[in-house]
Image (cartoon, rainbow, N blue to C red):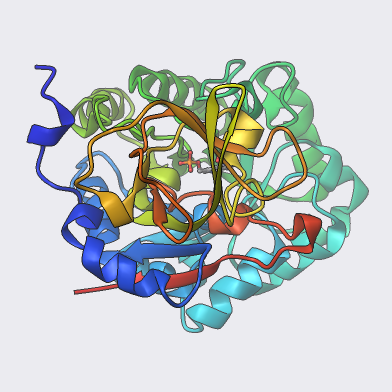
Length: 387
Ligand code: LLP
């Protein structure tokens, strides 16, 4: 069962390594996205029979070509800010508003007003917007985000349910919320929950749907239940990939118990993580008290995930793919912080040297979009490969 990575079929970037080295000549740090891989993941989700509507959480990767590819695969989009909404409509001007969810967190009044004007689905997760701005919501349809009371995910910072998380209405506050909605003249047409990001156990979505469905019965006006995104990704090539069949089975089972509601999902990472790589140029290799450090021209400025969540990403020397593994080294960036480490204990080839191109795998989700200009370094560039 534990097939060595070398026996697995080559990844898209292994097949395209020559092309990636060529692209790197135009400058690093550089993200490259492989659109056929986006479509492959999109079709897997499209094949899950229990799902009635699917939305891409565009915060994961708002590159225009990615959005266009997913729109063509039948996806709508989940946006969390006015900036994301405006970007989406610049890229896809004729997108129907019923293919767009607006799911902000603690957003200002003007953002709700703009989203309501556009006619997209607007989610609120407390009674406060209804009480503070009743005129905005009078006669409107809204979606209510609930906190199922638990969160899951790859790191505590991305778990979005439970008492410590700022998201979602606690179920016990529902009666009070319904009073506020009635007073404001707003109608609840859908329930929503997103418990976190990087989840591998499909039973959690089963629990969430069942919980929301039982609350929906008491509300009476609910037509759909959105169980959020959060589908995990195997960052380590030797780890088991996300089990789409188990996800499909869990959703099918719970949908059969409550068939009266449409089931909506909003994955981000799952659709785009694997399609993206980050190319970095080696700047300097040092050895300090026995530890080899391979320095790259992008670090926590180009890819924040390792510094922020201790996230693990595969790192290979693309220039010397066929060289044997060398002794363990740390791969570090150019930022003036001790936490600017992209990977520890990596077996890069002994000959790794200035000018080599490093490839950081599974960087298509929450990569370029979270890059920053700390130390006043330039933002990474982005390229797209399509068939
Ligand atoms: N829906 C809502 C309401 C969300 O807040 C999110 C992600 C998603 C869907 C999509 O979750 P996904 O399927 O991508 O897991 N920067 C972190 C991830 C933060 C996710 C925030 N919300 C990371 O790099 O791991």
